[in-house]
Amino acid sequence: MENKTILITGASAGFGAACARIFAINGNRLILTARRVDPLLRLQEEFAGTADVHIIPLDVRDREAVQGAIESLPERFRSVDVLINNAGLALGLEPAQRADLDDWETMVDTNIKGLMYCTRFILPGMVERNRGHIVNISSTAGDWPYPGGNVYGGTKAFVTQFSRNLRTDLLGTKVRVSCIQPGMAETEFSKVRFKGNDEQAAGVYQGTDPLTAEDIAETVRWIVSQPPHVNVNTLELMSIDQSWGPFAINRKQK
Ligand code: NDP
Ligand code: 8X3
Figure (tube, rainbow, N blue to C red):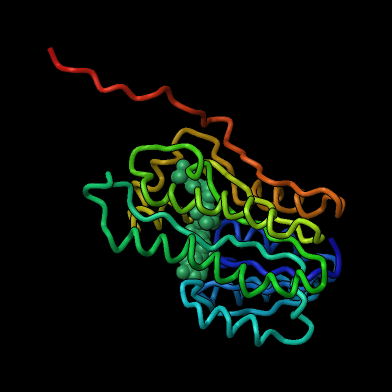
């Protein structure tokens, strides 16, 4: 991976920031986007001399802003080689009947619509150049249900299936699409899900060796470093301390 232009959504924390670090080498040009600008500026400072960085304060839910940001990329950042659709979040873990409808809308707007906007505005250039790679960050939650996963899991199921459908549209081009489905990974994810409740967030990872942001970045690096004729479709990974449970059974009380 050298001299590539890589656009990362949600680069201010977690997987996105780790991806930025892993790709800030070999003359790569990084386009780092997120709502919070300060962490992006810190990354730009950290990479001074190793990678050319363009920062875009961006809320992926804002379709016009996404379009404007992509259409006004400086010339040297215009030919995006790799789009890492990473920005996303879970909000709440309540059962569907008690969940906050605003939280559901935020997850749909970010995880589904935001990812759609970034993809739709970047993809034509990739097809025109007949090269490029879109890496979508889905989740184990997109395939495996769990109590309280309701809309979050639904949005990630969209990401997984959208990724596959993209490849079917792109057959005959050299544009690759990959989808990564990580399990439990320790980032700001749970702090966001539990709305700043640090204790509840820490409880998610307590007594385990969860995946790290660096594990995911390394996976992205491996996927995009495959020879151009290899398309990794879907890749699921979990911590050694995570697995599936049995089916839940409701038994009648005697
Ligand atoms: P973090 O909370 O650490 O990072 C999330 C990133 O998404 C932040 O940079 C945040 O930036 C950005 N983001 C959130 N909303 C928006 C928005 N509306 N517009 C632009 N950027 C946004 O979480 P992770 O790194 O863990 O999560 C990254 C992705 O990985 C998400 O899609 C998540 O669903 C997925 N995932 C996470 C797992 C985990 O266990 N951690 C497991 C499987 C998948 P800012 O707030 O500055 O806008
Ligand atoms: C994040 C992993 O298990 O919290 O996507 O849904 S999980």
